Length: 328
Image: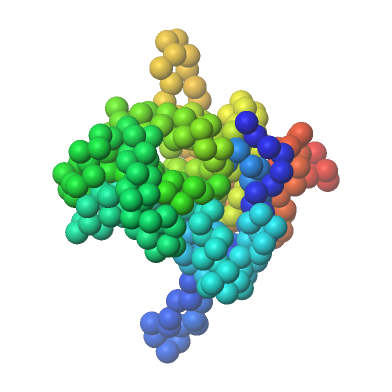
């Protein structure tokens, strides 16, 4: 059940990566992976973040947890600004914020057995004694659908879906309130994806979890999310309730993404919106609206002014000049 209390608020968050000069004539610049993003997440909800590869989704997730240091902005978790917070205080909040990574094999130490992988966070934080930790690990294995025989095995002895279950159990070991799931099913077979998604939804209900779910797959996001944010070139261009986004998209980029979703309805022909060209480089984004170089509806103002993310319909926000009052 979604609580209207905000567990996370992100304000004007930026993450720029400096680019060194290759030649004497070139100017030093930066890659604007996340470029002034603001949004909030309610307790108990799943906010899905979608966009093309290179849109900055994964960098956003890692920056929120301060696995990457932000260039600018605020990250307010349960009323505390994580930006500028000392390592000691940040460690206290990290208990409540965990991450599930895209590649379950790369995120698990191949030299550690399952009981070590899941129990390590508890040992580092000095939570529970050895006997209590073992009991906790066994309980978590049962929660994610793995047998107790898995305790002494290594990651390479499991399938991709089983390894992701281990990753989820590891994230749950600290009893977190908030989990960022970065493409958690994209490396899995389609037949296994739904199993892992349903598991995450069941665990959300059982443990009252809040998710920030990052994916490029709009069908997956539709299945698990309550609200959806659409990213393009380091910015959120549209955000709102799932039903609004999928049934009444407003931003031209959102419309193009949704038109690419395959349909299995017999006799239903869906118009495919093809975008011209490739996404611009985040090291040299276009002026004005960064989408104007590919937008079929762009006009002069789009090349000059960067649109703000503004509520256009009830709790549906869009950054597009097509919906500004002086353009209607």
